[in-house]
Length: 322
Image 1 (tube, rainbow, N blue to C red):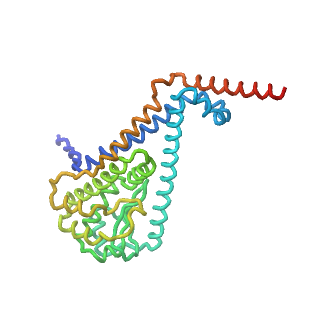
Image 2: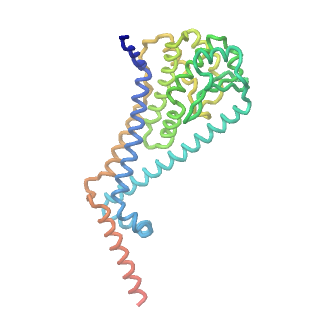
Image 3: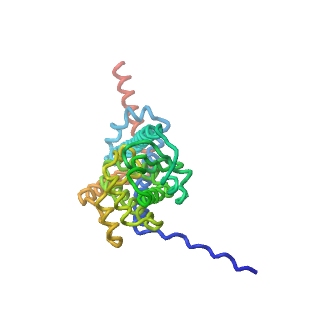
Protein backbone atom coordinates (compact mmCIF):
# COMPACT_ATOMS: atom_id res chain seq x y z
CA UNK A 1 0.00 0.00 0.00
CA UNK A 2 1.60 3.25 -1.10
CA UNK A 3 1.94 6.00 1.50
CA UNK A 4 -0.50 8.90 1.31
CA UNK A 5 0.89 11.93 -0.49
CA UNK A 6 2.13 14.61 1.86
CA UNK A 7 0.24 17.87 1.77
CA UNK A 8 2.46 20.83 1.00
CA UNK A 9 2.26 23.46 3.71
CA UNK A 10 0.36 26.64 2.90
CA UNK A 11 2.67 29.53 1.99
CA UNK A 12 3.35 31.78 4.97
CA UNK A 13 2.40 35.42 4.75
CA UNK A 14 5.26 37.89 4.83
CA UNK A 15 5.29 40.50 7.63
CA UNK A 16 4.38 43.27 5.18
CA UNK A 17 1.51 41.24 3.73
CA UNK A 18 0.24 40.37 7.21
CA UNK A 19 0.29 44.04 8.31
CA UNK A 20 -1.36 45.13 5.05
CA UNK A 21 -4.11 42.56 5.65
CA UNK A 22 -4.75 43.99 9.13
CA UNK A 23 -4.95 47.53 7.73
CA UNK A 24 -7.37 46.37 5.03
CA UNK A 25 -9.51 44.70 7.71
CA UNK A 26 -9.49 47.93 9.73
CA UNK A 27 -10.52 49.98 6.70
CA UNK A 28 -13.34 47.54 5.93
CA UNK A 29 -14.37 47.73 9.59
CA UNK A 30 -14.51 51.52 9.46
CA UNK A 31 -16.61 51.44 6.31
CA UNK A 32 -18.86 48.74 7.76
CA UNK A 33 -19.25 50.71 10.99
CA UNK A 34 -20.45 53.74 9.05
CA UNK A 35 -23.02 51.61 7.23
CA UNK A 36 -24.23 50.17 10.57
CA UNK A 37 -24.58 53.67 12.06
CA UNK A 38 -26.49 54.79 8.99
CA UNK A 39 -28.76 51.77 9.35
CA UNK A 40 -29.42 52.56 13.01
CA UNK A 41 -30.36 56.16 12.24
CA UNK A 42 -32.56 55.21 9.30
CA UNK A 43 -34.28 52.52 11.38
CA UNK A 44 -35.04 54.99 14.16
CA UNK A 45 -36.42 57.48 11.67
CA UNK A 46 -38.16 54.85 9.55
CA UNK A 47 -41.67 55.31 10.93
CA UNK A 48 -41.54 58.97 10.01
CA UNK A 49 -39.55 58.77 6.79
CA UNK A 50 -41.45 55.97 5.09
CA UNK A 51 -45.16 56.91 5.33
CA UNK A 52 -44.76 60.68 5.70
CA UNK A 53 -41.70 61.58 3.62
CA UNK A 54 -43.09 64.83 2.19
CA UNK A 55 -44.44 65.98 5.54
CA UNK A 56 -41.14 65.09 7.16
CA UNK A 57 -39.09 67.11 4.67
CA UNK A 58 -41.26 70.21 5.20
CA UNK A 59 -41.61 70.10 8.97
CA UNK A 60 -38.66 68.00 10.22
CA UNK A 61 -36.30 70.80 11.18
CA UNK A 62 -39.00 72.66 13.12
CA UNK A 63 -40.08 69.46 14.86
CA UNK A 64 -36.49 68.50 15.67
CA UNK A 65 -36.03 71.72 17.63
CA UNK A 66 -38.25 70.24 20.36
CA UNK A 67 -35.41 67.93 21.44
CA UNK A 68 -31.73 68.57 20.74
CA UNK A 69 -31.17 64.81 20.44
CA UNK A 70 -33.47 64.69 17.41
CA UNK A 71 -31.55 67.44 15.66
CA UNK A 72 -28.17 65.83 16.39
CA UNK A 73 -29.38 62.52 15.05
CA UNK A 74 -30.77 64.18 11.94
CA UNK A 75 -27.41 65.87 11.30
CA UNK A 76 -25.66 62.52 11.77
CA UNK A 77 -28.04 61.02 9.23
CA UNK A 78 -27.17 63.75 6.72
CA UNK A 79 -23.41 63.27 7.27
CA UNK A 80 -23.61 59.50 6.82
CA UNK A 81 -25.80 59.69 3.73
CA UNK A 82 -23.50 62.27 2.13
CA UNK A 83 -20.49 60.04 2.89
CA UNK A 84 -22.14 57.02 1.28
CA UNK A 85 -23.12 59.07 -1.78
CA UNK A 86 -19.60 60.51 -2.02
CA UNK A 87 -18.18 56.98 -1.85
CA UNK A 88 -20.41 55.77 -4.70
CA UNK A 89 -19.62 58.81 -6.86
CA UNK A 90 -15.88 58.56 -6.26
CA UNK A 91 -15.98 54.80 -6.89
CA UNK A 92 -17.62 55.39 -10.26
CA UNK A 93 -15.20 58.20 -11.08
CA UNK A 94 -12.04 56.24 -10.20
CA UNK A 95 -13.27 53.18 -12.09
CA UNK A 96 -14.19 55.24 -15.16
CA UNK A 97 -10.87 57.14 -15.21
CA UNK A 98 -8.84 53.95 -14.83
CA UNK A 99 -10.79 52.19 -17.58
CA UNK A 100 -10.22 55.10 -19.97
CA UNK A 101 -6.45 55.14 -19.41
CA UNK A 102 -6.08 51.37 -19.75
CA UNK A 103 -8.22 51.27 -22.90
CA UNK A 104 -6.03 53.95 -24.51
CA UNK A 105 -2.95 51.85 -23.77
CA UNK A 106 -4.57 48.64 -25.05
CA UNK A 107 -5.25 50.31 -28.41
CA UNK A 108 -1.53 49.75 -29.10
CA UNK A 109 -1.42 46.08 -28.05
CA UNK A 110 1.39 43.89 -29.43
CA UNK A 111 2.14 40.16 -29.45
CA UNK A 112 4.45 38.77 -26.79
CA UNK A 113 7.93 37.86 -28.04
CA UNK A 114 11.58 37.55 -27.10
CA UNK A 115 12.66 37.79 -23.46
CA UNK A 116 9.18 38.83 -22.39
CA UNK A 117 7.57 35.67 -23.76
CA UNK A 118 10.21 33.51 -22.09
CA UNK A 119 9.81 35.20 -18.71
CA UNK A 120 6.02 35.11 -18.91
CA UNK A 121 6.09 31.38 -19.58
CA UNK A 122 8.46 30.80 -16.66
CA UNK A 123 6.13 32.65 -14.28
CA UNK A 124 2.97 30.95 -15.62
CA UNK A 125 1.54 34.29 -16.73
CA UNK A 126 1.12 33.54 -20.43
CA UNK A 127 -2.63 34.17 -20.50
CA UNK A 128 -2.53 37.16 -18.14
CA UNK A 129 -0.04 39.60 -19.72
CA UNK A 130 -0.67 42.30 -22.32
CA UNK A 131 2.17 44.03 -24.18
CA UNK A 132 1.48 47.56 -25.46
CA UNK A 133 3.61 49.89 -27.56
CA UNK A 134 4.61 52.82 -25.34
CA UNK A 135 8.03 54.43 -24.80
CA UNK A 136 7.64 54.78 -21.02
CA UNK A 137 9.13 51.81 -19.10
CA UNK A 138 6.45 50.55 -16.72
CA UNK A 139 4.25 47.60 -15.83
CA UNK A 140 0.98 47.59 -13.93
CA UNK A 141 -1.78 45.30 -12.75
CA UNK A 142 -5.28 46.30 -13.86
CA UNK A 143 -8.81 44.90 -13.84
CA UNK A 144 -11.16 44.40 -10.88
CA UNK A 145 -12.86 41.06 -11.50
CA UNK A 146 -10.21 39.32 -13.61
CA UNK A 147 -6.97 41.29 -13.14
CA UNK A 148 -4.25 41.25 -15.78
CA UNK A 149 -0.70 42.61 -16.11
CA UNK A 150 0.12 45.29 -18.66
CA UNK A 151 3.73 45.75 -19.84
CA UNK A 152 5.08 48.41 -22.20
CA UNK A 153 7.61 47.94 -24.97
CA UNK A 154 9.65 50.65 -23.24
CA UNK A 155 10.02 48.35 -20.23
CA UNK A 156 11.09 45.32 -22.27
CA UNK A 157 13.69 47.40 -24.13
CA UNK A 158 15.10 49.04 -20.98
CA UNK A 159 15.54 45.87 -18.90
CA UNK A 160 17.48 42.67 -19.14
CA UNK A 161 15.85 39.29 -18.57
CA UNK A 162 16.57 39.19 -14.80
CA UNK A 163 15.13 42.67 -14.22
CA UNK A 164 12.09 41.87 -16.35
CA UNK A 165 11.51 38.66 -14.40
CA UNK A 166 11.71 40.62 -11.11
CA UNK A 167 9.14 43.16 -12.28
CA UNK A 168 6.69 40.53 -13.51
CA UNK A 169 7.07 38.48 -10.31
CA UNK A 170 6.20 41.66 -8.41
CA UNK A 171 3.14 42.25 -10.57
CA UNK A 172 2.10 38.60 -10.22
CA UNK A 173 1.65 39.21 -6.50
CA UNK A 174 -0.73 42.11 -7.23
CA UNK A 175 -2.60 39.89 -9.68
CA UNK A 176 -3.01 36.92 -7.31
CA UNK A 177 -4.05 39.21 -4.44
CA UNK A 178 -6.60 41.03 -6.65
CA UNK A 179 -4.97 44.30 -5.61
CA UNK A 180 -6.55 46.53 -8.30
CA UNK A 181 -9.98 46.00 -6.72
CA UNK A 182 -8.68 46.47 -3.16
CA UNK A 183 -6.81 49.63 -4.12
CA UNK A 184 -9.89 51.02 -5.86
CA UNK A 185 -11.99 50.49 -2.71
CA UNK A 186 -9.52 51.90 -0.16
CA UNK A 187 -8.67 54.95 -2.26
CA UNK A 188 -12.36 55.69 -2.77
CA UNK A 189 -13.00 55.31 0.97
CA UNK A 190 -10.12 57.71 1.68
CA UNK A 191 -11.52 60.35 -0.69
CA UNK A 192 -15.16 59.99 0.41
CA UNK A 193 -14.94 60.05 4.23
CA UNK A 194 -13.38 63.48 4.67
CA UNK A 195 -14.43 63.86 8.33
CA UNK A 196 -12.16 60.90 9.26
CA UNK A 197 -8.75 62.15 8.03
CA UNK A 198 -6.71 59.31 9.56
CA UNK A 199 -8.05 57.19 6.69
CA UNK A 200 -5.56 59.03 4.46
CA UNK A 201 -2.63 57.75 6.54
CA UNK A 202 -4.05 54.23 6.83
CA UNK A 203 -4.55 53.97 3.07
CA UNK A 204 -1.07 55.31 2.27
CA UNK A 205 0.50 52.81 4.69
CA UNK A 206 -1.59 50.01 3.20
CA UNK A 207 -0.50 50.86 -0.37
CA UNK A 208 3.17 50.99 0.65
CA UNK A 209 2.92 47.69 2.54
CA UNK A 210 1.38 46.01 -0.49
CA UNK A 211 4.29 47.21 -2.62
CA UNK A 212 6.80 45.90 -0.07
CA UNK A 213 4.89 42.60 0.14
CA UNK A 214 5.01 42.33 -3.68
CA UNK A 215 8.77 42.91 -3.59
CA UNK A 216 9.14 40.19 -0.94
CA UNK A 217 7.05 37.85 -3.09
CA UNK A 218 9.33 38.53 -6.06
CA UNK A 219 12.43 37.81 -3.93
CA UNK A 220 10.90 34.53 -2.77
CA UNK A 221 10.34 33.48 -6.40
CA UNK A 222 13.78 33.98 -7.92
CA UNK A 223 14.30 37.74 -8.06
CA UNK A 224 17.42 39.30 -6.55
CA UNK A 225 17.68 42.49 -4.53
CA UNK A 226 20.01 43.97 -7.15
CA UNK A 227 17.65 43.26 -10.05
CA UNK A 228 14.64 44.69 -8.18
CA UNK A 229 16.50 47.83 -7.13
CA UNK A 230 17.81 48.29 -10.69
CA UNK A 231 14.29 47.87 -12.10
CA UNK A 232 12.94 50.41 -9.62
CA UNK A 233 15.51 52.96 -10.74
CA UNK A 234 14.50 52.49 -14.38
CA UNK A 235 10.77 52.92 -13.79
CA UNK A 236 10.91 55.52 -11.01
CA UNK A 237 9.86 58.43 -13.25
CA UNK A 238 7.03 56.69 -15.07
CA UNK A 239 3.46 57.90 -15.72
CA UNK A 240 0.89 59.28 -13.30
CA UNK A 241 -0.08 56.29 -11.19
CA UNK A 242 -2.80 58.15 -9.26
CA UNK A 243 -4.65 58.71 -12.52
CA UNK A 244 -4.55 55.00 -13.26
CA UNK A 245 -5.66 53.97 -9.76
CA UNK A 246 -3.79 50.65 -9.86
CA UNK A 247 -0.80 48.97 -8.23
CA UNK A 248 2.17 51.24 -8.80
CA UNK A 249 5.84 51.84 -8.05
CA UNK A 250 5.21 54.16 -5.10
CA UNK A 251 7.45 55.30 -2.21
CA UNK A 252 10.69 54.53 -3.98
CA UNK A 253 12.95 55.33 -1.03
CA UNK A 254 11.09 53.19 1.48
CA UNK A 255 11.03 50.19 -0.87
CA UNK A 256 14.75 50.42 -1.60
CA UNK A 257 15.51 50.58 2.13
CA UNK A 258 13.47 47.41 2.72
CA UNK A 259 15.33 45.71 -0.12
CA UNK A 260 18.67 46.68 1.43
CA UNK A 261 17.59 45.77 4.99
CA UNK A 262 14.97 42.97 4.90
CA UNK A 263 14.62 42.88 8.70
CA UNK A 264 14.04 46.63 8.93
CA UNK A 265 10.87 47.57 10.82
CA UNK A 266 8.16 49.26 8.83
CA UNK A 267 8.16 53.04 9.27
CA UNK A 268 4.54 53.96 9.94
CA UNK A 269 3.43 57.28 8.47
CA UNK A 270 0.78 58.54 10.87
CA UNK A 271 -0.19 62.14 11.63
CA UNK A 272 -1.29 62.38 15.26
CA UNK A 273 -3.23 65.53 14.43
CA UNK A 274 -5.31 63.51 11.97
CA UNK A 275 -5.73 60.78 14.57
CA UNK A 276 -7.02 63.30 17.13
CA UNK A 277 -9.42 64.91 14.65
CA UNK A 278 -10.70 61.48 13.61
CA UNK A 279 -11.26 60.33 17.21
CA UNK A 280 -13.19 63.50 18.03
CA UNK A 281 -15.27 63.14 14.84
CA UNK A 282 -16.15 59.53 15.62
CA UNK A 283 -17.11 60.35 19.22
CA UNK A 284 -19.37 63.18 18.06
CA UNK A 285 -20.95 61.01 15.38
CA UNK A 286 -21.62 58.10 17.74
CA UNK A 287 -23.02 60.42 20.40
CA UNK A 288 -25.26 62.03 17.80
CA UNK A 289 -26.61 58.64 16.75
CA UNK A 290 -26.83 57.06 20.21
CA UNK A 291 -27.58 60.14 22.28
CA UNK A 292 -28.77 59.16 25.77
CA UNK A 293 -31.57 61.75 25.62
CA UNK A 294 -33.04 60.18 22.50
CA UNK A 295 -35.97 57.84 23.27
CA UNK A 296 -35.85 54.34 21.82
CA UNK A 297 -39.14 54.91 20.03
CA UNK A 298 -37.75 57.98 18.28
CA UNK A 299 -39.76 57.38 15.13
CA UNK A 300 -43.08 57.48 16.99
CA UNK A 301 -42.09 60.54 19.03
CA UNK A 302 -40.92 62.47 15.98
CA UNK A 303 -44.02 61.39 14.10
CA UNK A 304 -46.19 62.81 16.90
CA UNK A 305 -44.21 66.07 16.92
CA UNK A 306 -44.66 66.50 13.18
CA UNK A 307 -48.39 65.85 13.35
CA UNK A 308 -48.76 68.21 16.31
CA UNK A 309 -47.10 71.04 14.38
CA UNK A 310 -49.02 70.21 11.24
CA UNK A 311 -52.36 70.30 13.12
CA UNK A 312 -51.47 73.67 14.64
CA UNK A 313 -50.62 75.05 11.20
CA UNK A 314 -53.88 73.76 9.71
CA UNK A 315 -55.89 75.14 12.63
CA UNK A 316 -54.26 78.57 12.36
CA UNK A 317 -54.92 78.67 8.62
CA UNK A 318 -58.60 77.78 9.12
CA UNK A 319 -59.03 80.40 11.88
CA UNK A 320 -57.41 83.13 9.76
CA UNK A 321 -59.69 82.32 6.84
CA UNK A 322 -62.76 82.47 9.11
